[in-house]
Length: 214
Image (cartoon, rainbow, N blue to C red; front, side):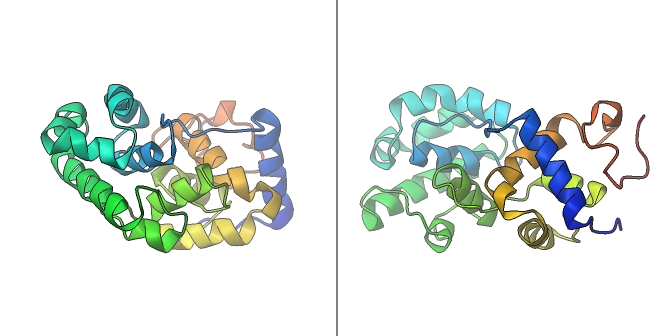
């Protein structure tokens, strides 16, 4: 396993990320916090592009828990049938919406525990929502962050929980807010799974990955 990079190197890496893109944004389209929760829940084992294509029309007619319940399971299923695992995801979204109406007055809660109590919402989804909507420095570790963190030495860990702790422990506090977006975007477009684009990488001189494609 690659060793964990030191503080000063990690600080330089995130300074470069910041200089290149000061305000990185998540790529899932949403119109409010409820549609953000739905979009992130739907994105499990699916691409952001695919989710956006399915939800663009959906969110025009169902942007609150009650409107989603009014649309119903069949109506929702029809909208998201191009997304992987769409039947189970549709059931979860309907159950989630019912709980939000019954127990939270139709409002999305802003604590991790309350978010994770909702069907289809795991720790990663909760962290994305806490970070993107309420600007908490919560770190959602997906496959891109896991790969980049371990390859580069920025956040080393054997599983996603370990990498999440490594991100929180080793990335300077002033970069925590946007850290997961910088890492996701870098992993999605530069530090890709096969044939990473090392020659175009702005941190290639700092990264510990030995099999660089230069």
